[in-house]
Length: 79
Image 1 (cartoon, helix red, strand yellow):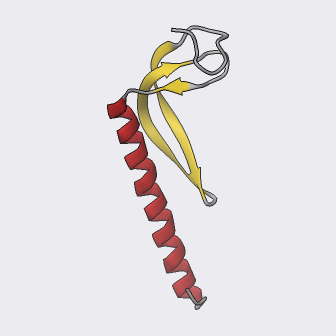
Image 2: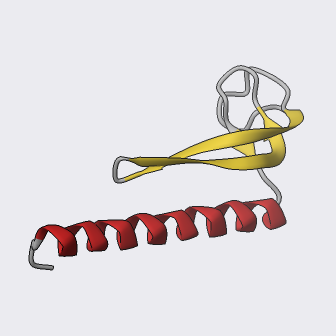
């Protein structure tokens, strides 16, 4: 299948670690399996993998928010 974004290349099936950043913090979501474009880097995930990645991102966002609240509390900054 051609890349739906750039149409420059055929998608390649692979599992890759996906970097993710939120509010200055970063994490790596391990082994994201999908179809990747070698030309532009776009990825196409199936519903199950997309749900897993979304859940991992949401959990990381919550972790960052909790750490930020804790840091604000420690230095005495009002919420």
